[in-house]
Length: 242
Image (cartoon, rainbow, N blue to C red):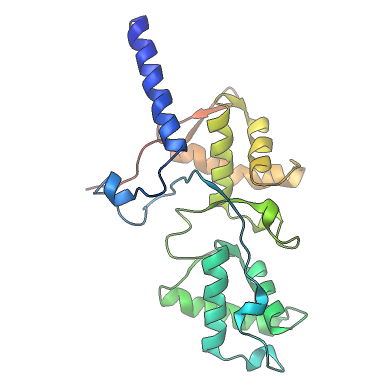
């Protein structure tokens, strides 16, 4: 490839990268790619960092009863949906904390946890929610997760174990987008900083291994001599295969 062609190709790649990172929020997947399904079939990155938003437990409509078990199924389901729609993907312990605070209950006992898990199972069966290990989300949200700044999360919520792997994949991908060829440890550290966690502890390093491996397996990233580069899948739109 001649120098002129090489420079032109590099400029085109840089422009494509800039357009991806400054995506038009008014553009829809259908408009940009008519064959693209409304919900991606595989994990798909998002690019706008948004503040973590938490539900106000006082607005869940769970007060006014003497016991958590006196809350009707319909009222409890409505409160669960409200939390998940605002905070999903949300860890089950965060969800339980919102529900208990809204109901004025101090402790998550086994009976209360069983009641919550039972309602979650029914809502999942009805197709209203999606469950993945200890996390609950809106349908399709696990493969198209929000990219959130956890500095705005309530103190008890702001724990790395409360962040779903899909969001951790986002923070790592963005760390590599910002500094392609970055050392693995620097990517882990910078990724955490991007979403509001300041220390790459031993636990944090271990917690990030599965999301990092998922990005490598997906072809989003390549690891060359312990340095991370964008993989071939990094900027491809994921459409339904024929």
